[in-house]
Image (cartoon, rainbow, N blue to C red; front, side, top):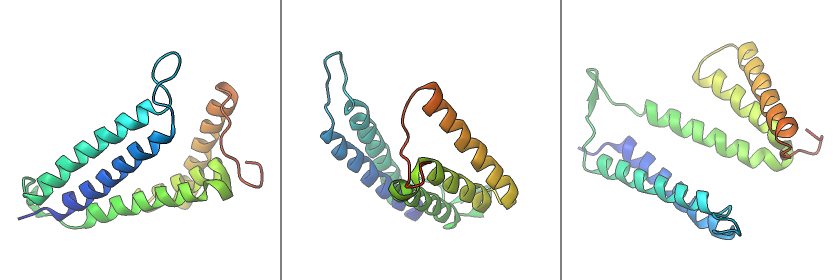
Length: 153
């Protein structure tokens, strides 16, 4: 019996890996001193694709067990993964309009609120502190400019 959740997630991840490898072709593979900025995403995309194909293959041929701890598998895990993935895609889409800090805070807060079922106060606090930590490390310590929104943060 095929495991639909592994099959669906494997196909989605394989598509993502192929997209990453394809898009890395826009970056130079080699630089003057060694691997260029396209080297790592190219090989990461290939690795993700290969592992995702294995996951899809195991799901298609039913190598995964149908029961875990005596409970039948449901779509709950797949649904949670798709919701998390969709939240990440929405946060990426918000980057040009909201900036990195706002997108990261919204993504983190919503994931903690929805998946961890914590209070809005805890989710907001963690999101704020994580965003502040990213900002301090990247902008002040490393000197990397993060994408900003129209409000400058």
